Image 1 (cartoon, rainbow, N blue to C red):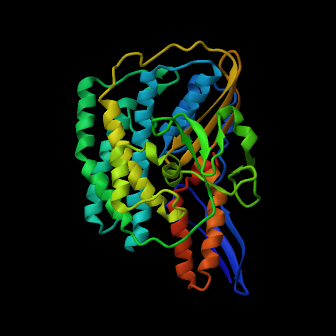
Image 2: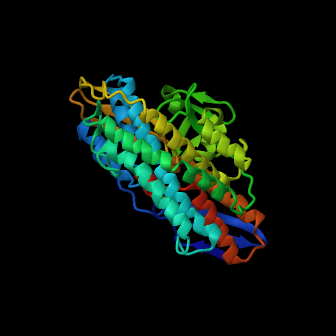
Image 3: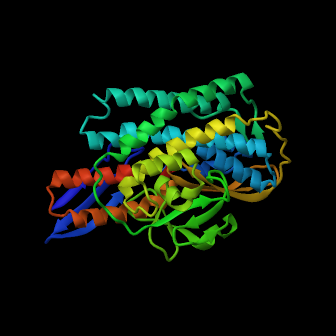
Length: 412
């Protein structure tokens, strides 16, 4: 029997899952990311450094801040520029607001219908109200600082062209404080869902820093204890192509498939979570070391609490000093890796002496998760091979959605 899920709904981008069941066994399971490639790495060549952040933000309409931030960090590294602590702080606020916004939409609009047996969000009136309140609050953070919540205009290499006034920041903080209870309700709601049981053999991967929940900088850490700086990246990681997908697969050499994203982050750096997020995790009995990928939804809900609380605290300490610095343009190579909503995001650039891009490389979270999703699907099908075809298809779609992939980013 051949089973084709020709189009996986409620994910960002276009992909399918195909496999065959023969003589009681699984054969030839493939995650086909068939969205057409967009060649961003190619057409960045020849563009000046200050054009790059705006261009790469168009890779994704959900995580433009992550692509902008990672590209800016990489370009600044290439030119030997070190931003002020105030610039770093505001960039982290932007990143946290976008992670929360992405998680909110994924949980309420993409994942929740699987467990409520509703068509999208129809009939989920209470959840819709909470969704709108949360999304407006975190979008307001991104929009006030970035000029607009989608594809910000004020965040550039060297800092910010404009920073909101203290009164504007105060209004943003008040709105965030009003939705803290909604964030906790989200954790409770997501934790109560009836998740399929699945144990996978993955290598969790995340950034880690001392004394803070690493987002825009840190050391690459694996669940088995490997530590790697940016300068060692290509020693440990490689990209591979498969004939049935337009996305590359990024693998950790000699290791199990890697998993990045909220569940991996909580496993690697749970102790660095905001205390209120740790309380939320304790409230629902969440434990680190959980290797059920469906529980990535729970991890995302916990991160929403973290992002809102940390945004409030960081916003309250903005000094409005040293928010823009002049860059001395020069040739060089630079790379940066950050935590996008879905996991690790790498940008690399080589610039000539005029600051024009000679070479570009971008590795997205879904490229890291590609093999892990595929291997998790294989295990899921093998453990549920006797279930009816419709039920098996649904379990597979739910698993893919739990990873929250962005197929559009993966074929950049």
